Length: 235
Ligand SMILES: [Zn+2]
Image 1 (tube, rainbow, N blue to C red):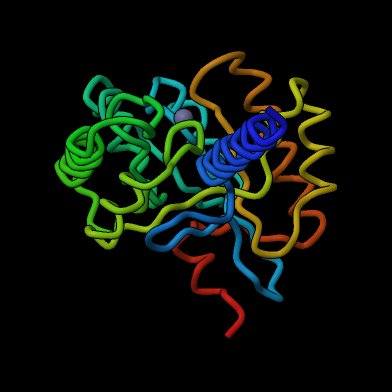
Image 2: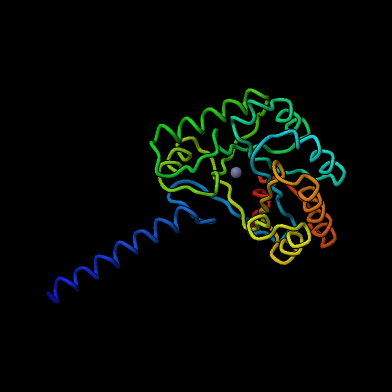
């Protein structure tokens, strides 16, 4: 009986360890099992990348002038089915010289699915991004930051890089003031900042973005695209 209970306990510990490990890997900001992943770059220069997830939506028309005002080039991770519905907005982003990345086709969690699911989600959106005239390399950002084995394996086949982030104000705070303060405290040279301007309160969203741009500019930071940030990597 003692032996049985001992084995049962060992079993429970093992299941928990594997489960915990899977969960950790699935959500890890700085690690995946295949291919290249970047959540920030090591650099001595005061540069950061501002990245926007989801959309495009009609919000793009309010966001682009703000970025232009401050001469900020950003990186937009777009969702395929939203590109389909907002082709003009997607093209505007490209015309303004921002970087565009793939954020899946239907914005579902890219874990525990068939391999063909990952392929479709990636390929459909890559096709769309090419169709609207984007010529540069296309990086991928997984919806909800979730990836395990199948997705990274396929991205690696295509030589596509996974871009995560190390500063995420929208995850922890709701008011623009709190978000700006959080970014101010947590930013470092080479940070990748994630924000979500495509849905929710437009005014608050723009205020937060403008606050981040102003605060970091005052600290001497410049804003670059993710591609440019990777070039700044300490050699
Ligand atoms: Zn998203």
